[in-house]
Image (cartoon, rainbow, N blue to C red):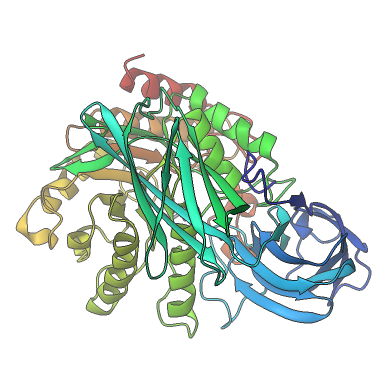
Length: 547
Ligand code: ADA
């Protein structure tokens, strides 16, 4: 299943997860089957495979039908063919996509996905980096049978009106037939009005409980499509009623001050690559909850839809960002690929209450006029699509950043105590940076809320040293203790996200400065074994939460 709940009661849906055939262009001795979803690096012998492969299976239709194939994620490029005919291509491991094939006959059909995880000019966002680009169909796949005209996307935006709530709805359909749409939630049903490109309605006077991290109450929203008086299609999503707003230097959730405490988390696991099973996702969130966190940043790309669902269910505030970590802006495919990653994230993840801000372009060029043009474009894309959420990006350009006028929330990655300066400078350094930010010199950042979006230090699991040197668990503990003491209690900082939740694999080119070819800044190691810092982080987080 693509989600943690059923999205349809009327539309027939089947999972295509399971064993598919595998053939790898440059590895003729590879096994001839692979489980979907998985990363091919988890197959013995393929730990370092980078290149092309074809992953295929058959599916059967009992009668002629229109088929909608939905891929949660293919890493990183997919060319989809049905019965040998090219259907669509998609780039980027981290956004879902669909392939619609109309009028397929009854009987058996082949589905082939040519997958490519190679680097080069064809890939501006997936490249050698401080995290790993795996290969394969790494998220679930579904087959859905759809009528000629079917429900495509639902965009639901909650609004608070005193003690009651309302919900603005926009629904798109795929197909030409004139239909009638209705939507139901929390005991109310409305008909939607047809506009040029979509359908819309506002459901008012909803007597619902607000969504917060302590009361993560979700309500089923059901949209149904009737054509010629006959019910032909449906789609269900889950809505949490909450608002998120910026008020001067503060962040407000449902009108109340919100402070964020948590982690940056990569989708990475030594056994599963980026194809993390749902039970392991749950455990990651349970660990973060135990640590006293309420916040997770999906660095540096959109996450698996099931992980976002779990955040909604368990009550985690999420910063989700489109895919880009410290990439240059001039590769031939950059403009097209960053636009698509950003648009697809917004289209597929819009309704999640957990997501309280959108981000983009982590640690890119935010200090030149050319760079600013790109920031302005991508941040503008986020804001135009969704004015209901604040926007941000994580900057490492310090006092030379010129893009802080473009965001609602200023976010800074600060590694005092690790890459530069001793631990004693953690407090003074953030105050220097805030001093600059709230002055005229900051190009428009003054007076905005601030998140320290990355900080921390590396520790190799098991490396205990009484001399507390770099890479020891003791040193990491000292850095995090001081960072959390300062950042969690600072009146001008609304959020702090430790870099990072767990140790993660990096590409081979990053071996220098990355012992074990892992980024070792996790509070838990790659197998989620707690390091010495675990209890320190927990104490500081719980203190800050008043627990
Ligand atoms: C940056 C970057 C992270 C990671 C981190 C580090 O801030 O955003 O992806 O590379 O540094 O570990 O140095």
